[in-house]
Length: 102
Ligand SMILES: [Zn+2]
Image 1 (tube, rainbow, N blue to C red):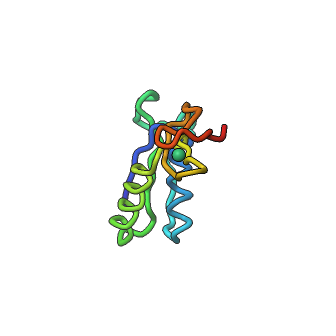
Image 2: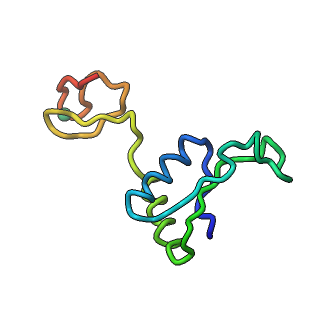
């Protein structure tokens, strides 16, 4: 097994694991229940880790996770009129002025 990612939160770890499994890459999350499985790791440093079962898939898994990280923030929204991407807190499109959905 190879560790391919250290997630800031368990949710992030779960998203990463889901992305990998959707591509057929088997993975496990360690430290998911840090309080119960600490071993020698100090509690505050126990962040969720993603490990892939198959060492041969390490490079592929890292690629997938890098793409995940580069994905647009979830709070962006596309203009229904021109398709331009706007920050989630914008009420109207910065490009065409069209109203944006909530
Ligand atoms: Zn627009």
